[in-house]
Length: 455
Image 1 (cartoon, rainbow, N blue to C red):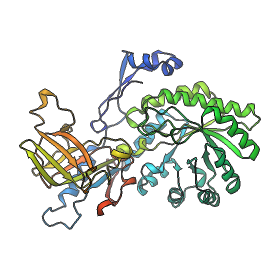
Image 2: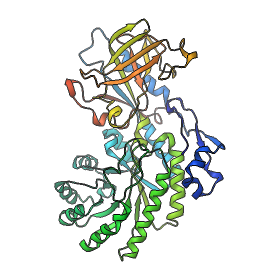
Image 3: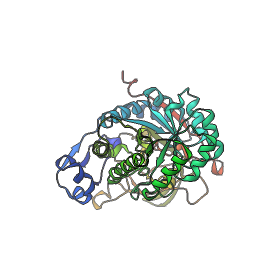
Image 4: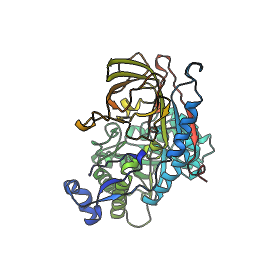
């Protein structure tokens, strides 16, 4: 597929291959022609980030902190969360995939206000554990709106789902079916199939999903155990970038639907196309989904659902972090230490293969939020004078692994007490933070709503 270049914080446009000139089949299968196609178009984002509201919130918090007299930890890192962004993203989802019901992947960011906002929008939930089910049910969400999307569950968790009437569940092996038959025989089951997720940010088919060659055996087990199979599920990997895998997975799902009829099982009702969607490439990936669904599931007999996570929250949160220490290497080179890192909210560097973008927020008693080019990770020859400061940025723990970036270039020579901000840091960040070395596990979150606040 074509590469996608976008800086969401700038509200810029992205360059996409124009799929409209080829047939649906050629569009997806012939990936080389897609990449090399010179006929491209610019797809304008449906809206710009709420810079004014984000900046005002950051500014107000930082101005309230006196570095000389503040209480220990008062200058800790913090988030700004735009709840209005969630609604904008949902509107964009309905525009691109109007017939696909999203079940938000709670693991991506289980922040309570985020979950409440998504619930109010009518978005359902993908849970993978008892505690995630508990969290969603505590908001008075109907259990019908939950899918227990973990193919390998503890028996006690299956029993718990049964007591809470959480019916939708996934599986990919015979042993799981026997547990379900014993502890939750009324489950509405989805058989999860493997996909080609080799280009995904985080691969999942290495752990979950049955091969097509094993489908018939699993379907026979469903039939023998007299279980209720209602659909097929797949996941092309978190942060997927090769959308041919989406097309192929839909095609493979059609095979399973047909195999059920061939084996005398009830006709399946639902296709779960999983997650892996990203805002930056959503226009492109959703077009592939639409074409695949129209080709292999024409008509309106089958219902469609998905399990997006990062699509909804990545761009909704901005992280601010304080420079707590500095080690000067030379006149134009330094090691900067900030109060967040890979054991905190930037664990996404290790677990999610993200590369957070550090931008200068506050320096020399001035705010620099709107200088979106205050830093760069690649220094060109003609940029030496523009970015004179070379830095590495480190987290607060005593582990040498706690490094945010080994090489970045800044416009300004930051000092202790200055601030960075990291845009688009809402997915797989705070959810996996740890209290290692005695540092904070929980960061404050300041909430704004760019839709309501703009009124």
